[in-house]
Amino acid sequence: MERAMLWFKCAAMHDPVRPVIKEPAVLGWKAKYRQVDLTIERPLRGKDLLRRMKGWFTVDVHKAVDLITQYGKLVVLDDTDLVVEADDPAALEALSTKMREAFGEEAWLEPIPKVRLE
Image (cartoon, rainbow, N blue to C red; front, side, top):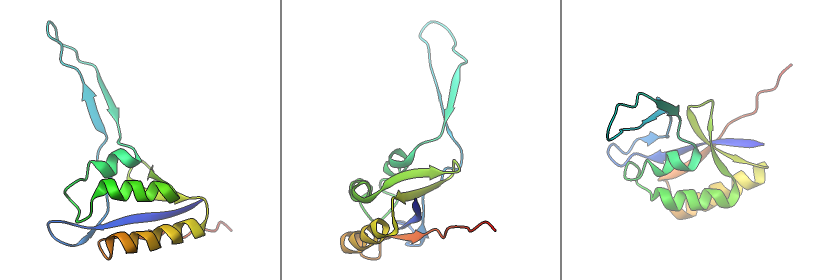
């Protein structure tokens, strides 16, 4: 399994940024006739996280999701970092090329080197 960080150009500051989860989403209920104190804490996952970033990047995140899912999948690593996972380095390289063609310097991948245990 190969992984890469996904970077975008920030629409406001034009700096390189990447989506991360700072805190999990907290979901709850409002009842009409009583108080419900039940909540569920759940982090956003891959595609959902990227789609929530609509408008914050200089690229169309829906187009990015469609392109990325042709070559790999979006996953949240360690409940924090959004990364792209692909089966092999060739798939990541092909995706990187397609991203350059589609978005220029507005979105790119940064491969995550594998750590060798000795």
